Image (cartoon, rainbow, N blue to C red):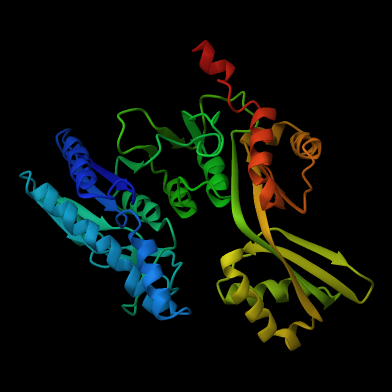
Length: 413
């Protein structure tokens, strides 16, 4: 009995006619191994950015519903072209939008979560020997509203399909050869990892590493999907995402993630009461606004200030919501600081190695880098710094934690 394999190709991988033809060859190669293949694709190259520019030229503040309607057209172009490329090579292929593929989501425009997948049509096509090509990044609500899954949501589509179809594996093909210790475009000493755990990858993805969408990693972990990140253009081994990493255990820190476009918002003069924290963040959550690092500072027995970081693109909406509920929340004023960045170290080895955070702070202090906010978990430490020193911080930490060096176990093996 042939097994199912899910392949996902990102925007760069399908960015031209030549690259789509190359993808078709990679798909056929998997079919010739005896597998049933489901292919998930993103929009071609810069298509999504072009659509965003087009929308903003018409309306600087378009509705999220109509933005979803617009942006989902990008993936539809790719699925049809890839189907044609496979058909001309003698293979039966069928292209499906997210809703045709049975991908159901919650009723949130712009950043919806998949609730379930109806697989009858998919299984029917696979049983008849067809290659199924699904538009990533999109789905439909129970009331037939088209939604998108957020930037990078094609990864989530692929892993969710792999879980729903009980696929043997899910290969994420991208423009890099795997998961690196940090972004090699900024740090030339960055090294590809042979393997990384679900938990580490989830932290890296959430903290700015763009190679995988966080929700894709969540799905893979929750449903035990074998996940491999590899190059769409080069024939070489990628990075395995697995429950427990069997190699490179000597690395306490496994990777460094970073992202710019961070803003700190301070809500000042709040009542110093038990429910203040829950009230303010419940209010933001109801508007699907995500906050990150949170610091509370009590000014006196009656008042307190709460600072938190958000992505800069969400600043205006966040402040608008807070001002809308100003009387209910009871604050005096809002302050903001932009041009910030978040730099994070990640590694499951931190659990059993105390002092990692202290070492990170020492490295940054030695480099003269001021830390404005801090957040920690068992396997990560995040700091907020000025955007101008972001790369300097990453380079210094990469050297300090020896991430450019091959691990002892890999050398011995």
